[in-house]
Length: 218
Length: 245
Image (cartoon, rainbow over all chains, first blue to last red; front, top):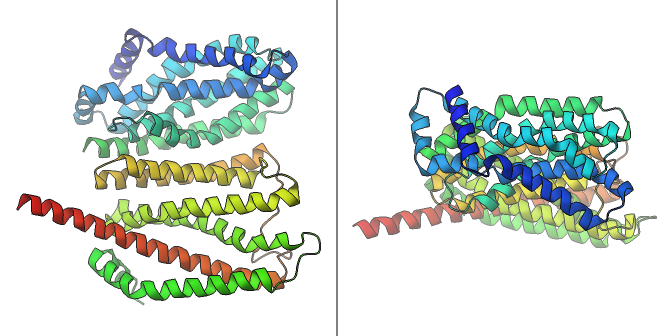
């Protein structure tokens, strides 16, 4: 499992664009928002938590089809399926690798982007906390979507259509944590809900992803 | 009644034959109860003292909203049956129900908007019920799109069945998440068994007739579309055999 994880990470780094692409996309979204809504910092501060969460979600979505596509094309996915490692393990490792290459950099870089959108300083810790808790769920759900569409020629658009509705609860609670934190309100309830969603999806969804992946490899 | 006898209808031939027998009756019953319910509701009920005649859209809005949710629930059950017992009729029934569910969701959203404009002063509000219906609509779209995208029918049935089950969990989560996210404009349930405050009897009786009509209409459409799917698949098999032989 660890060697598979290391292999995926190495591939993502060396293939170029894997690591930085999501982050650059996040930056572009953040830069474009003030052009769209105007530079007034009061408005920006108000919408910053939502925009940052949306940006993180889209950056995640963008890199989803890379999870299985390359392994599907060169046949390594078939090899993985016949290896002693159970499919559930493969899927979990893939999701973890995806999170390490997109979710984690986003979490680390998010204060810089929050600064661009003039988020009040007391909101930073909540934004980071909500992203750390929420982005694993985004990766795991996305892996399920990627497993569903792996055999399709042009699965990209379909992947978005399938995955985005599944992101709704995570987005609601994640953005709520960040918003309440920035406004200095109590954040315990949405934090617990967000953590619950992440824990639930990490525990259960790999089984569904492995099931559909096996169907697709049949 | 012996419940095991139900599984006989998993045989496509038996299913088609029974559907051909039952379908005219169900269709006629659906038509009659819809006409009776809607005419009764539209022309023979009093206007509400505050809402005027706009209240009568309830006879379309409530049944279609109920059917939109029931259709998804039916798809969930048939998807489970397909995954567990591998009856093709079950998977085809789920496929047949999805577009009907889409139309029901659209009817509910459209009638709600038409009623909301004079009553709430807006076509659309980000109210929990409205929002979760819009999300349900997106789930339906994804489900149908996945059916359309995959060529192998068994693979498509498997993948959509898993999507339906996972989607059900997330649709349920979203329903309660949006409650948390925004407070509602929408009124509570119009009909429930355990509440004091329901719709007045003058309205509820024709409403029940309309609901029965929508249920029957849904059943008739699912029967018809499932039979069509079975025939389509048989034609394909026959054509393939001809090309070989």
